[in-house]
Image 1 (tube, one colour):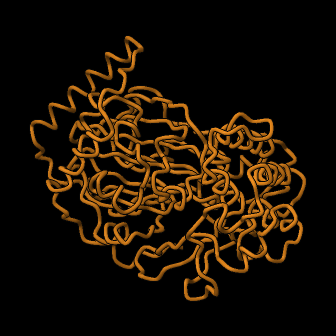
Image 2: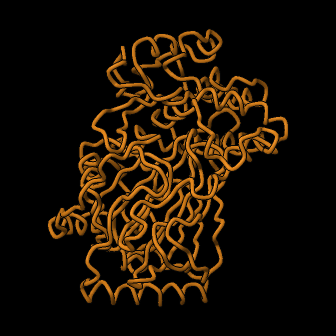
Image 3: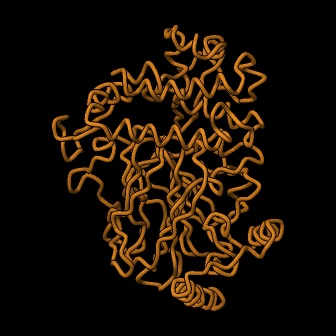
Length: 451
């Protein structure tokens, strides 16, 4: 299920995921049973590309899937299911197929019955959590190592930069999935320049100067604001008011450890309970559907050494991805730029970095692609921008100081202020910020190609 050139596609990409339109024979219970069977299949068969990771590129040759999901054969014959991405340093678009489990998950999400009882589950959300936990159990079992060769073949993985290249070095599939890389495998571009801000993950990247831009071009959830993303009140998020966002989407085939965008210290980690919806772009871009602010997530607050300003790294769980693990987690830990911070166990998911207003000037090519909008394929260490001028408004610096004072108080009292601001008010303020933030950008990277 490797990427293919956009020019090589012989069918259009599916845009309307309305269950009644493209899979009218599949009701909620049929879709739920299909998802349960697909997950159980990963523990019984070695060829993942013919089950949970099947795509529109090979679905037509898999009769057992057509019986499991009525109408799937016709859908695969009519459309390709997936997304376009751009290689960094190139204007050429590539198509990345969507795994079957994500397509079935979206069928359930878009059926309009999120709170409806389904089989033995109280809601669609409970079903998605259950299958995510089950997949984790399957891939933590010693017998799951048999799935590794199939996974490598399905995604055409290059393991030359892996710390361990022999299958015998891994205890189970999750051990392989969260594999480490050889030292120096992900160098920081322009490392000699302390103002360089590197990518924190191997991913598909979108960058926006404000939340207003993000919601205009990409994130369509009604509840998407910085306070809601961080799971805090507007007062607690004051230091990030009118801040900028970098959205890093990890696909199953990616290296699943993430790294620090700055040199600084760890201040606090806050875990937020939530759903495990798919983070596929078609879900994120679905009008009115909340993914980033509804899903389970964990927020690391950091202090940038040179400026004293806060930066938040938000790790977001997703369908079949329930585990978020911080490897740098002690309050007061010092962190270098590019140093490992944590990892996701099994599946694809998303990281969002929230920078204070005017903290970073994103590279021009990334801003251009994000407004198209199309994701850009990057790796850990690729430059995504540079630190803006250190002279920030006194108001923002005062807010940063107050932010850490509030955080220390909350930590001592173990209390979290309730949300006091309406989403409409927050959206309005972001719209004002849209006019205030200049769209200046750093020069794009030249000659960078994903290997």
